[in-house]
Length: 259
Image (tube, rainbow, N blue to C red):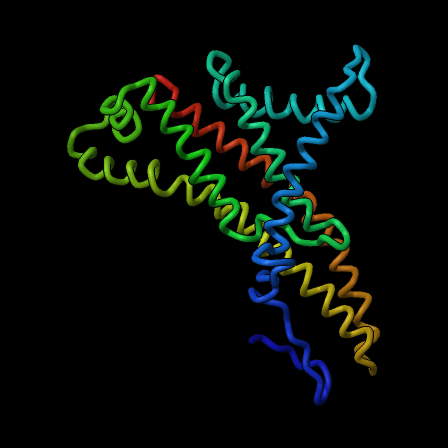
């Protein structure tokens, strides 16, 4: 366990991986599990409430919902999948974006203060069990089994001696690496960001109450914690956007006529 000695006889026990494994709330249900369910309720309630009484001139609530929908529909799905094929995938991309976003933002909400996606199992489930089957299914459906494998692993114009090396590399990337990196990217960002916030917040608290000369250093730790909170908020939004963007990109690449 990593420790930092701040004063004679006193030790600050730095937060670590152990702080991400929370005890069950009741039965086998943990806080991350409960937050996952809560995020679904929040997203569903938000869009239901925003679309119950649609107006030609939207209010603030309707405008917020339309902005989120426009981002998922036009800025992500349409741009990455293409105008011809994107419409059936808009619900999926919008759901993925809002789901990752809300679960990330839980890390900044007082009392809750835990980004669900800092548990690798959750983003991995979305990537491997949802996005991965969808983009390969639509690819096989459009190009056929052999045609899709060729489409994904054999760039047109590549000489045969290059393909000997290129085919296994492309296969590994498209069928093994892509879903893993999609999940690891958001997990690593949420894990590292939450850990940094814990370090500076708990260190500031320790310095403040430990007595002695270290008290004057406490405001610096708290200042770093505040600055990191704003940075983490930006990263949370960006990671949700990137996750949805890459998901749409994979679908678009599977449907594309060219490699």
